Image (cartoon, rainbow, N blue to C red; front, side, top):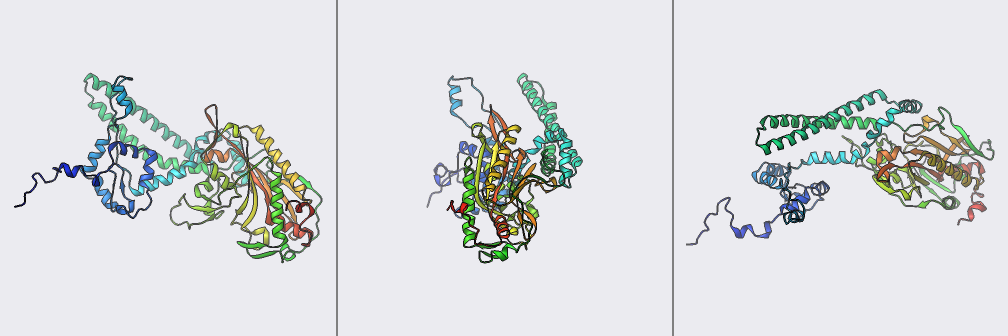
Length: 540
């Protein structure tokens, strides 16, 4: 007769089975590392692994176990096994520092207990992650009090831009949020004071039942307030995000103002650039066109020359893509089709969508500098790139003036928080634009753009324009804008000075847009044999 092991029922696991490593999970000190905030996201949002149960999508953080479905994971959370693990993790793990204190090196301290709660559900974690990505934009609410201090200036900016924003309503939302936030701080301080008083009474052996009841009531009130405050905070912060940048004193109110003009313009009418340069331009639609022969060489020589004028700038290469969080951080609503979205927006807005913006765009530069800290000695930072830029909002029947993609030369300056330095750098850039375009020998002008034509992130814009003889209008071939610290406050682009964080001031713009400039040159010349001048041929 085969003998049977005694005590083989549940709860009497044999020592040989207990010590086998095939069922071994992580020890408590390893799990303590896993539950730190910087590691939680990696474990709860793992990549699909077909060798794991449930493809590694249903993981218990505290028990270090994978489950086959979300239902199995939720059932596990209600078991005694999971609850015992939460209890075991309440005590801080043993450390070398604790052993040294026990040996006489320093003052001995008892291991502290902490409250361990079950991890959020898959849906709750996805929502918190979405808001974490989006809340990088919610930093301006910290500075909204500063904007309210200069309320007349903000009201003027909203009125002249023609933006439909109810400032009074935003202010009321903000003040309500601040009131609730102060109540939260008061409850947290009260809770802390009661905790200290309970600890003192316990040491003396006094009765603490009344204080415990009071602490429980405050804890419940605090929990309810935080749940309500979350939505109020989001609503107030998103309302603040809709506010535009304040206007620069030089920004015209209603009509553009001439800053500089070079050579007289020819008012004679001419044929369209599409007719003149028919052999040089293969135009299929605004999304798809090609430059051939001298037109392609013109593009290459022109970008080479313009790049050479930026001797004090550093060339970099930017990404052609960015996330929605960057687009919104640049005060642009991607839902109004102002940028190309690679994924169709359905249902709730997702802030992790991908957009095609081009390396020669402000979005591309801000993608790199979001949540970026630079040292003071690196400023001023002067950068430029020659790449493609993409714009879906164009007229469909205007040839090279309405293409959705174009070769551009974009520049970007990051400066210290000094208004005088920003003005000096802006004037230097404007002088550089004038010098660069003078050498080409074509008529052009620089104008201040009025407030209603500015983008929300701009406070001043100087436009470089060339005359189109066919349409008898001026077309923009470049620009330079003062953004100040508007975007750096929204996307946390900072520098450190004496251990104090300050926001950089930004000047950005486009030195060159090839398609509209080529179109103006063809229409003004009236032919194609003189497209490549002796000056441009030097840059072969």
